[in-house]
Length: 576
Image (cartoon, rainbow, N blue to C red; front, side, top):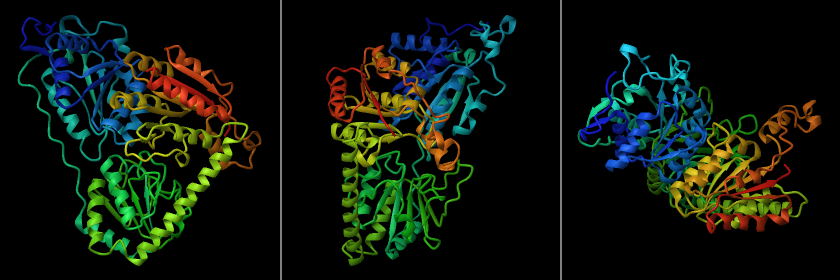
């Protein structure tokens, strides 16, 4: 067998050590991992890095692959820095798929590393690290990368030890090119443990700049806005950066552009902005004479509402056509594939040469929609106040109580149930929603990652009871305790898969399934005592059943997180 690197020679390192140095050189601070029998070269590499003080990311063992990937997702959302996750061969890769699909649809640059079953079977042809366990035969696949190929921008298998740094560099430059997304690199054990002659530290590769908007397209869109009487902006994932939030807020205020945040995954526009017209496009979209779609894959549901036949539609974003969606047939009269802050800035400049913000038409529209915004918020407040007087807890009341209790800079990771109408979020980066892929089990792990990046800021995960189970909660709470990452998890517990029930009733509202209120195959009762799960890891857990109990329970949970530095969970029994 080929020998391992000579530990007595500081100039000879393993491919695993070179890999860690390359990750560090590219700004990877954390190495989320769920290890297996393919990890010995990585373990040895970390051990040698500790002894020699060689650069390496911080390793974090996470006891479930889904949690590891969602944590990486959350770190990126808060920090804007790409992340790395390593899992065990084919079976570990399989356990990442749910979270990886979420990351792919949300354009999150995560380098997913996976071991590969040792190639050689030992004997005369065996290399250092050859097969040594029964599972090394059964875990090999003909094409391991086929598991993830549709959801990564690049995939490769390390073929020689010397390639380790170059493979990381190639992955990083492609992950960070617009539109961003995950990459996958498999690491055979013999190759990962093979010797490499140490040389100069790996140098990070330059990242292609985000595309700039076409000036002619910007001028055309500016003219469309200038002519429009009833323009409408439908945002979705436009709030990825503070610059994008500020750019849209400036445009909306200056030119009286009403904005609807349809299924937002980021805080696209401050809740209190006078042009924020809520979270559903109806009825505005049906009356619009121009619709501008800002980074939104599903700006309206065609079976429910749509713009008039003569209304032009413009799509803005890194990938305004959503090229990885097999079928998407929204009208597209103008598409601008570019960085959104740059697009908003260029559009502001172009409009400034065409029209004054004080133009009578714009001023009248500004007053009309500012009045409408106040009326909408009054109706929201009345609805949540009414819900607070009911016998059972409703999501409107729970959302309002959270909104009133959370500090402005708290970060919320929402996996569906939180109703933003009733929970004020005004700061960029203070709200993140589940990927449009809808892979459940995201928010608790993402919140842990967010906490890792956010330091002392309060981080909250809002989740349904079904999604909480998907999150592998014992793995999440163990991780929180292990690494000192206290977060607040709030379960909107209606003891059912709400999306399944709603879909059934929408299709068969007068059918046999409706006779049981659509609970068939969506019923999750009897509900476990979820508040006890967190107690097993030393956290604070409470069950809340009455509306009047909520404010004090939320305050106790926040105090446990912020003052006692303990993970906290509220199991809130809801009726909806």
